[in-house]
Image 1 (cartoon, rainbow, N blue to C red):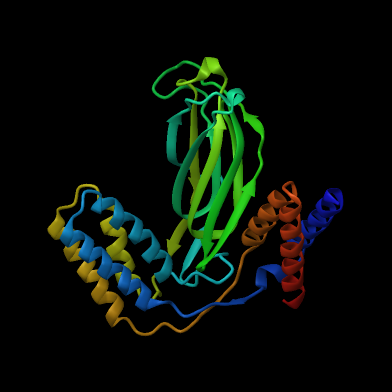
Image 2: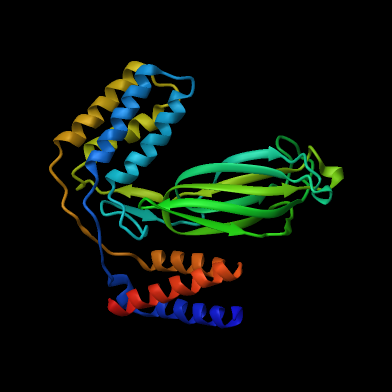
Length: 305
């Protein structure tokens, strides 16, 4: 059955790359949810006013989500109405977590690691070549399983994977998502050989798209304010933070109502979906069933266009 699904996948990949109709396919998008964006900014203003210990990190996370909303994500996660999301696999991944492993895998004492990311299309489990800050070789890490939760247009999905294999130093396990997720969380269960306890390092990483904003976006002023604030959030004075947040809020409230646009998914977006389907095909029976259903849905949508 797996072989049959893989053959179907390869055939679909060929169709996706050969049919020019795919590039011209259109997906009707939803109006930008300016009310949700404004509510986020109001929450940021309240956070900046109350100033809890990690308020800068909280605001940074909320800026990501608000930018995602204001760019007008299309329902299938393939991109935005008012921004170009470039999936460039040469972009350096963002390290979400880098930790030493202190559990022996043979003794059934495996350790759990988790991390979250925003505006992401791929997650990675990486075993660095060298130990942090040292030129000594890193150890290999055994990953028993991993779980990924992610949200695309508010729809939360879960991937459970029994990996049961070693990740050699300077090696990466890639977990492609079917589109650009507003947020994603990865959790792994891992261990090392007894000789590497407390020495071997494992990293969780995220690959984010390069986003180029469209100046024709009705909310471009607010987007510019939020991007400028995010760039300086680590050291900006609180008065400056509040000022830019208030400017962003005013821009959202005074912008003309944005009608739903029609977005065209690129070949790149189709390939991204196929990569996610391919990843599911090597999983459990449930994962393979999901892959088959998603592949069928993708082929049907291509036929309609």
